[in-house]
Amino acid sequence: MNQRTPGEPGSPASFEELAENPVSRRGWILGSIVLALVILGLGGWTALSTAETVHSTFSPVYFWDQWTIVSDLQRSNGVLPISRLWAQHNEHRILVGRLALFADLKFFGGNNTSLLIEIYLVQFSLVLLFTWMCYCFGNSRGAVLATIAGFCGFCMFSPLQIENFYWGFQITFVFAGLAAAVSFACMVWHASKTGGHDTAWISWPLILAFIAALLSEYSIADGLVVWPVLLWLGFALRLAKRTQLLVLVVALAAIGLYFVGYRSPAEHSDPWLTIRRPLSLAKFVVTYLGSTWDSFPAHWDPKLRIPRGQVVAAASIVSPKY
Image (tube, rainbow, N blue to C red; front, side):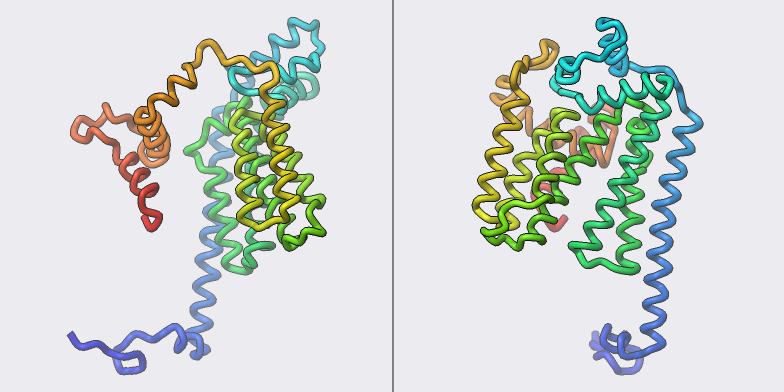
């Protein structure tokens, strides 16, 4: 089959030729703007449709873990002891969640409304944060930035995580994600502000990164993972040696403080038993990741012993190009 070079009759135009042609260039720009606005609109529509679903299914009744704060107040004659803010909830220390639940009971009638609004504001803040990061550190502008904002809006308000929106207790989970994202963003901000120079090894963005990491840690136990990520960011961003040492010291102190008085929940499995079964642990991880693609367990599909989502997750781990 004969190949045609750009410029010959019937051959496709190159990007350079499109750029040089004013009419084609205007069409390209207009198409990009229209597509970006469509994606931005879909993100906004997702947020509104999720809000409508939450409004139509709203219940003011506390559910399950939310009664923890009620029990705390009953045992202390309506006063929330400072010690209970630190107390374990399963493997978590939900200081932020307890404060939000207490505020809902004390100031907003205890009907879940304030909690659901806070959850929505947290997710919206994540959209703004990611968009701001792309604007400041990724130099994204115009149609590209609008596309990013729309995509983030769809992800943050996707109905696949509807439980995060209709159950007030989930404020502690979504806030942990926001605090972690803020911590990482502040580390990048610190790197751009100091340029890795040894003379500028500490800054307000770095201090904010530590505060946000602590807030994530004291929302749910998963927040402990923020500290290793901060250490990795310090290395990857080539921060000053003194900065990396400071991050290490603060991380060890924060993690150590978390485990002061910690007791492994009786209803949980022995973590050492899990470590001694790496194949079972790997199966759980792949199944967990695969559930984002295919929520049906393996035994629901008699023809396929491995869910499609697990295959996709495994392939994405093995091959970065997937």
